[in-house]
Length: 303
Image (cartoon, rainbow, N blue to C red):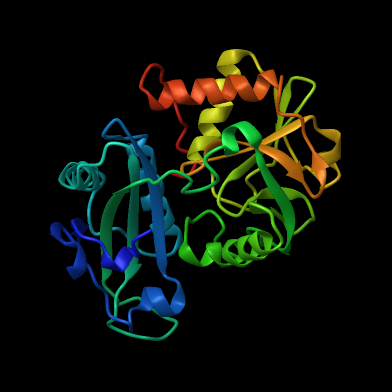
């Protein structure tokens, strides 16, 4: 894979398209030193960004939680994203939006810093998030050693770069141990999510998923909940201790990047992917959404 700083094309940067190589920030930017930066990832299907308005809305909410406002309105960001996707000729790909504090001052307080924004897009290669056959074979998960902090201890509802530090370390350790990803517990010792995706279990035809008390409100997660309601699949949202993994008969991750990704194993406990009608229905329903054959309403719980 070509390193991202060596690619060509255009990136929308602070209000205009610039050459890919010119989309730079100074090493003394506040966002680099104090993690005062946020982001969104958006999938592109058939040349169209999927649920773009929802992602832009959540980006604005993340900024407000980190005590800054985006310098561009939602309609501007919407048009800019479409412009970038068209300029890059993206058919099936990924968009990354960022906003961060600038370099006017390097100290904890940042009231007088500027805010910058960027939008980049690229085609997604096969196996970008997991192996190409992961949808059929499932992935292996292991519980990580770090926990997500309680909402009283960190701005957990912001899709802030700093909140992903735990995920990076945990996934690195999982990959070294021969797994595909790590599951994270919350401050109370219950399952909360994977390093970059939400977690669902199936048991006796019913979906079970953790609360979002300690994490962002997922857009793909909201799609899954809406699809379950449409299909008449029961859903239980609540605290799920690690022991629940052995009580379930199936599991999957969901997120913008991984879409719907079945799980074959959690902490050594295996699942039979064949015949799990609940997961099959969610996979099919989500594919229909991304292909534009059906729609769902995603509540803006982050607004």
